[in-house]
Image 1: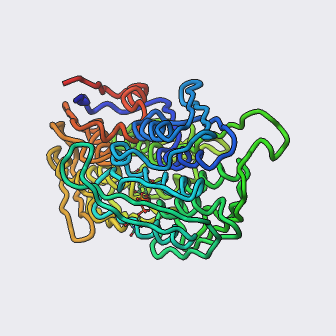
Image 2: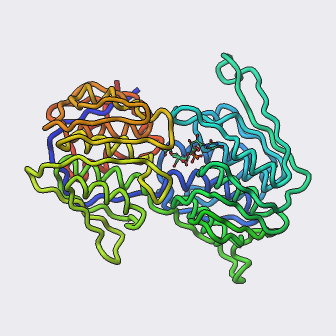
Image 3: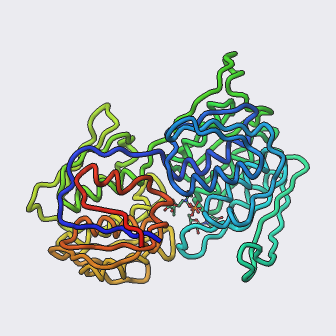
Amino acid sequence: MDKLVIQGGHPLSGDIYVSGAKNSVVAILPATLLLDVPVILENVPDISDVKICLSILESLGAEIDKLSEGVYRISCLYVREHEVPEELAQKMRASYYFLGALLGRCGKAKAAMPGGCYLGERPIDQHLLAFEALGADFHLIEYKNETDGEGYVGAVELSADHLYANHISLNVVSVGATMNAILSAVKADGTTTIENCAREPHIVDLANFLNYMGAHISGAGTHKITIEGVRELRGNAMDGSVEVKTYSIVPDQIEAGTFMIAAAATRGDVYIHGVIPHHLRDIADRMEECGVMVEAIENEDIVHVCVNKGTMFHGTNVKTEPYPGFPTDMQPQMAVLLALSEGQSNITESVWEDRFKYVGELKRMGANIDLTRDGAIIWGVPGLHGANVRACDLRAGAAVVIAGLAAEGTTEITDIHHIERGYSHIVEKLRSIGADIRRISM
Ligand code: EPZ
């Protein structure tokens, strides 16, 4: 078990580069099961969730070649399995995308209920609603946990003699259910419409990938998506070329936002490269309300965050909402900036019931935060001090890293495996802009 050790108080400065989006690649990797030709994916982040997805694909029979850093050639032509290994499915939330992809590929699928960050109840009723609407039967089963022999595991089993188009009206704006509806409908006969869709950048990226390979999906990024089912996804046959097509994963909006907050909290001057600025609009707006200068370099993939030494931040109110609102996945990170912003700030978390596990860790570093029924009230303090803290989940871990960078003194962070699920090479990236951060084996 390793830990991170941070000597805080150094303003971050220089150029940092964002990787491909975790929440996009964990859907696009399962989507390769729908293809009738091999494909090359690039800008794939080096994170543990990707390693798990690649292991699941290989367990199903896919052939995977790592061509270079972040570049993989994937062929699912000889996949014959439709069951996701339990021990892998339970390691991350996005394993349920294999349900939609396998259902769309062969009309059957089985996967243990997903793992991932515990943010409170994480139901999948809307995913099941979409699968059923397209003609699938589902069974929720429980069996003895084969991995560690303790307790029981819930699993989902899907089967469909034939998938046919339908109108799907989601009752909740759900990223996962929207993705799974797309994955299972893309080869269903006829035209499927999905209402009340989530609009996140990673949903648009999945639709763009599938369309690039021959699908007919329109409306991604809006609340209504229309899919004309196709029999095959042969990408290169569309233009007669024979080479294997290459698709680049969209930049990670949340990684970019995390670096933006880190630059601000340390009163630094950082250029964040490889981003899509309009994905960061609401994050930038909230930061500017605190007094942070955020500049999108026109016609570039760069966002510049600069805070003059001695700048006093002032508090603001943040409510998390589905895209294009303020992302829930940026809530813990933003709390660190608010903890350093004078006056009172209010955070309202509208997506997850339990996304405040980081609060106790920040309070150990001197933050003044009280939890309320649906969020938190933060009173800004002049500064934070180092402490021994833990990464309670992926984004809570990002928050304590930012707090450690801004704090005076030494911060040690354990349980860093949570952080490595979603941030590739975070130590090297932060060191490249002046952070005194090291990974220590315990
Ligand atoms: C995705 O989770 C992300 N994970 C989460 O990011 C992110 O917080 C979330 O979307 C919201 O943006 C991945 O993409 C792998 P939802 P997901 O379905 O799909 C309720 C991170 O830090 N709901 O959009 O599981 C649910 O309870 C992770 O990168 C149902 O009621 O989230 C929640 O209140 C954490 N029934 C709301 O919808 C369902 O069937 C939004 O959940 C599904 C969801």
